[in-house]
Image 1 (tube, each protein chain N blue to C red):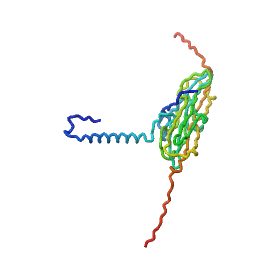
Image 2 (cartoon, each protein chain N blue to C red):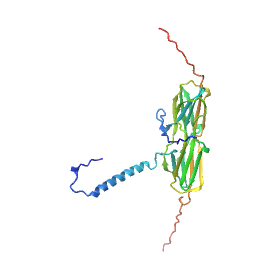
Image 3 (cartoon, one colour):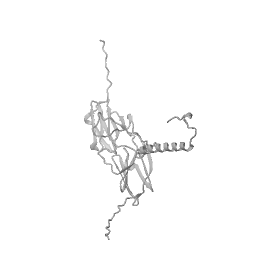
Length: 132
Length: 157
């Protein structure tokens, strides 16, 4: 088993693109992105987000992962505050050609998993240069 | 930090006033430091915790993405609450190449001393979408009790 100790990873604020009217914080979720021959998989840590709050889109090769946390009212007095809660937002440019109709996403234990199947294995393309 | 030149010093100084000045400066420093760090703390040990106090209970929350309930171990001994667990985000598939690796794997263990006495028998913990919420009921001695004030009208004699 792993002997490594988990560390606290600092949350980085994400820019939602233009100011929001509500005073809400967006964080960039930590991600793992890996690729196999068939697909690209994105794992993103989004604790506190339910399936209703997930908003995924792939437009012009830009994959947007957005997770909205349900409003949570804090009751009582804060004794200790070591982390901030907020929504999640992160964008990636996907280089591979993705079959948009077969994109699958699942959420388990606060981790979003997005499978992006490739349309076909990338063929090396040879471009011939003609003499002008 | 002001410079004190020797020439500026008066010929006689009470040596204790200087200590008093230092003491006041230190007091001020601790005050501003405590104000800032009273509730907002940088945690050093995983996981980062938020603790709230309600009238009858103490609520502790932590963000634990990717950690399954069976991999989480909570124990309460006296006033020490220990949170232990592990996360395994390694992929078992073969032939994968990583583009980004930001999610870490590993174990963690954090022990905190609770600020008040709690009922050891009444501890609730749930893990929901990667958020752990621990509810600890305060011990009856620590729960505020309503004291009824009865008004007695004294007869005017």
